[in-house]
Image (cartoon, rainbow, N blue to C red; front, side, top):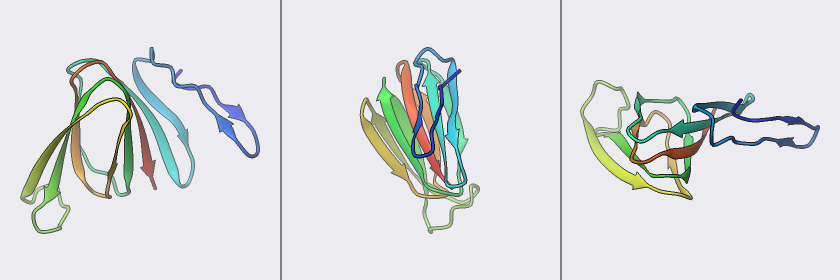
Length: 118
């Protein structure tokens, strides 16, 4: 299990288990979804696009994040894109605007926390 929940009225408490294979959804409600990704070296997350902002925090390890930005501001996946590649390490946070096409490659075993804003 990726996380343990503590049901409280004013707080929810979770444990992120670094030994969890692949990770999983930690928490979801009507405003956000929090996902734990546990990636082994060489694992990839293929092109992904989400209709909301994504906050991506590398907790441990190192990843390569490739962002495909639209040349003309139109976010449709089949239109020409400008590519940007970033290497991210521990405690680095990236905020992706809605509909940003991106992919991940784990350059070493990595733990990420992803918050998808609905």
